[in-house]
Amino acid sequence: MNARGPYAKGRAKKAEILDMALDVISREGYSGATVRQLADAVGLSQNGLLHHFGSKDALFTQILQHYDERIAIDVDPEHSDFASDLVERILTAVDVEQASPGMTQLTLRLGNEATEPQHPAHEFFRYRNNAIRRIIVGAVDELHARGELGEEVDAENVASLVYASWDGLRTQWLYDPSIDVRSRMTYLLTALGLIADRSSLTSRRTD
Image (cartoon, rainbow, N blue to C red; front, side, top):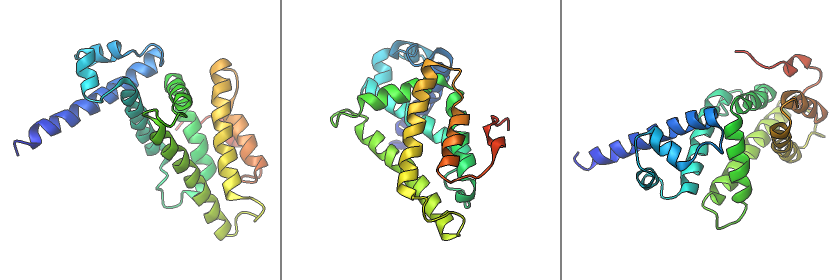
C-alpha cells in the first residue's frame, strides 16, 4: 500500500499536467505553450515538470496522446455500428480538431519532426497513423460485407486517401482559415463512393 501512494500521486499529477496543457494550448496556441508556461500553470519548476515525462518531446507526445483520447470519446471508434456512421465520425473528428487550432499545430509540427526514426515520438505516430487507417479499412470492409458498398471502393486506398487529404487540408486551413475543411472532406468522401448525396453533412455539427 505504501508503494502505491507515491505512484498513484504521480499518475494523478501527470493527468493534471496533461489536462492543463490541453487548456493552455487551446488558449495560447502551440507556440505559446512553452515548458515554462506549462510548469507555471501546474505550480512546478521546468525541471519538476519534465521529471514526470523525461523530455520536452515526450511531454508533448503524451499531450497529443491525451488529446487523442478525448477525441476518441466523440468519434467512438469502438461503437458497435461504427461502419454505418463512418462518414459522420470522420466529420466529427474534423470538427473537434478545428475547435483547437493549437492542437492541430502541435500534431503537424510534432508529426513532421517524428518522421526521423530516432525521434521519441516516431513510434507513437507510426502506431497512430496505422491505427487510424485500420479503423477506416475495417469500417469499409464491414460495409462491403453488408453489400452497402460496391467492390470498386477499395478499403486500403480509401483509408490512405482520407487520411492524407485530412492531413493536407488542415495544413491549408492553418494558413487560410477561410478554407472549409468539412465541406472538402465531404466532397472527397462522396467522390470515393462512401456517400451519395448528403449535402447536409457540409453543415457543421452543433450537437
